[in-house]
Amino acid sequence: MAKKTETRPQQGGNALDCSAVLRKVMGVLSVKGFAKVSTADLTSTAGVEYHTLHKAFGTREEILRAAIRFCADTEAALAHEPLRISTTGKEAILSMLEENVRLRRHWPRYCGCLFTLNAFIVPSEDADLQDFLTEKRRSLSKHIRSRLAQSVSEGELPKGTNCETLANLCFTLLSGITFRVLDGALPGLLFQSIEMFVDSLGFTRRRSAARSRLTKSRKPRHGINR
Image 1 (cartoon, rainbow, N blue to C red):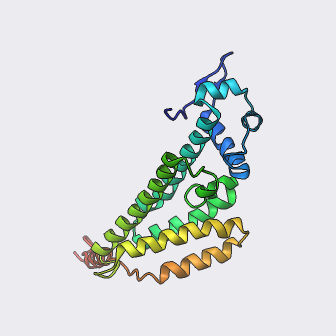
Image 2 (cartoon, one colour):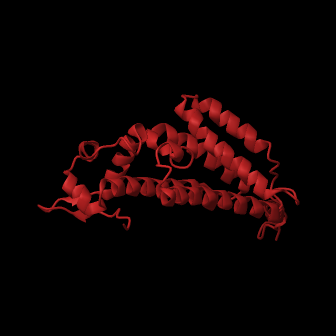
Image 3 (cartoon, rainbow, N blue to C red):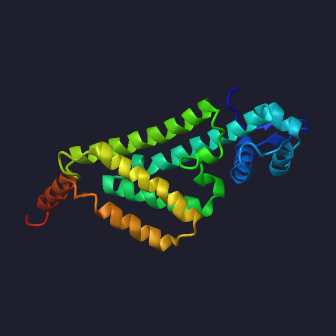
């Protein structure tokens, strides 16, 4: 069944905020697991009648799958953003890892299960959903690798850097952060560990950035010594 996450009108003119409903569903799903979540759990969590949920998403199983897919899409976007907007590779990796700590602390617990814990909430026989989440992880790892390769081309990382291996290492740490936050590790300790890790990756100041600053420093100041 097609994923439905937009807001849809209900009987009586009220609107169903599908995104909010799916987040709530994912919350109870992460606690009880796919097999144990009942329709009563869904209605009490979402705060609407089951027929409303069924009309918007389908059967119980389809509701749960929609919640997992929606939240995985959300997390994927949040994880990709620092890689996309950061001006340097070092900043990109550092921001991605640090933001993961902040999200895990302030969002509901379910946020920790999408990339690293899905084996505990997704039925093993649901191959399509397993493949979907695996592809989300693979996509993020590729994005990390691409950002590292950009750093090599810009002189921020040494030539010959194995970006595939380095991206795998970064993603492994990203996954491990989830478990550490859920275990109650202090944010300050995690931030220090992240900074130490990123410092060890061999990033240097980009040559292009250094040249730009040098050019500006040599630019004559017009109108001073006339």
